[in-house]
Image 1 (cartoon, one colour):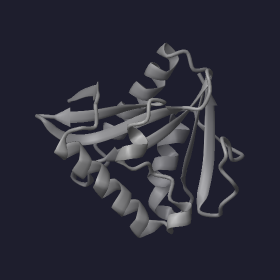
Image 2: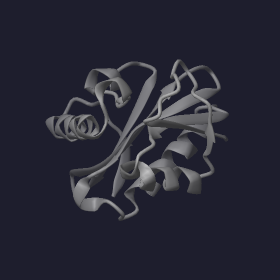
Image 3: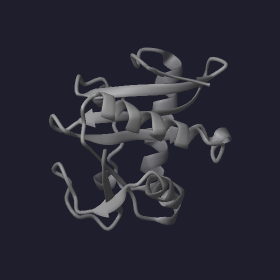
Length: 151
């Protein structure tokens, strides 16, 4: 497997991300969905990584700069057929390492509060994220939880 910054121009990554957004909308009402679409991920303050295995996209993750020291983890996704195979841990570890290199001292994230998102919350806890109040313009939402960690 290879993790690399992706320019978000290929049709395979577009389809992978479209599936992500559609899945989030099937679980979460639009007003509580915070997954970025392709245009949102193409903004200059976002760094996006794709995980490829034999050329196929099997995972992704991103960070969005909030300020000079604080970034938000975005677009964590593993291909359905590859869930529970270690890809999410690989991506999150890479994001944490790269955030340090970029000079960030804090990473935060928003994820869902229902059962579907329990594996994601456990992963974030394993990587030292702790629950926190909403940040960066988020508002309290019973369908969201917020987590943060220092680097």
